[in-house]
Length: 191
Image 1 (tube, rainbow, N blue to C red):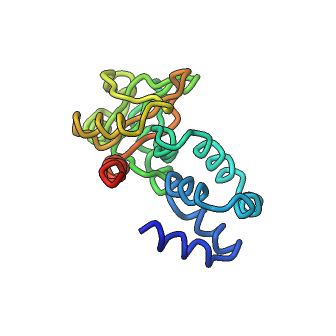
Image 2: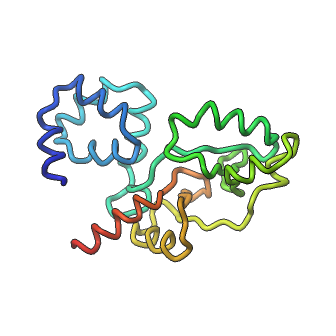
C-alpha cells in the first residue's frame, strides 16, 4: 500500500533512509526517491554512495509512465568474446547484487544489445565455448521512452520473465521483470 509506504518513509531519519535506499532494488529505490519531497531528495543524495546516487539520477530521469521509469539497472551483461567458464565466474561474482541472473545480456563495446544467454545455456555449454557461439540473437526488447503498458504487453504476449530496455543509441540501460509488468498492469486497471 503506497500510503503505508509513504508513512514509513516519512518517519525514517536521514541515515535510516540512506540505509534503506542502499539495500532495496534499484527500481524500488527510484520509486521511493520520486515520492520524497524535493528537500528530502536533496538532503538524501549526499548520504548515498556515488553508485547509488548516479543510479537514482539515471532512473528518475525517465518520465513517469515510460518503460525507463519502471526498469531496474540490476542485470548482468557479458561480452560476446568471453568464454562460458569466464561468464559463469562473472555470474557468481555479480549474482548477489542483481535482480536476476537467469538471463545475461550480451553487449558490444558501446553497450549495444546483441544477444542473450540463459543460465541453462551456460551450464549446458562447453567451458571453452565463446558466448557469441551460444547466444540467442532473436531479441525482444523495448526502448526506455516507450510506454510502460507496451512493456507489460510484450512480457505478457511472449510470456517473458525479463524484458531488456535500450536507449535511443541501442545501448542497454535496464530490464523490466515479469513482476514489474504485473505491477504496471494492476496500476493501469486501478486507474
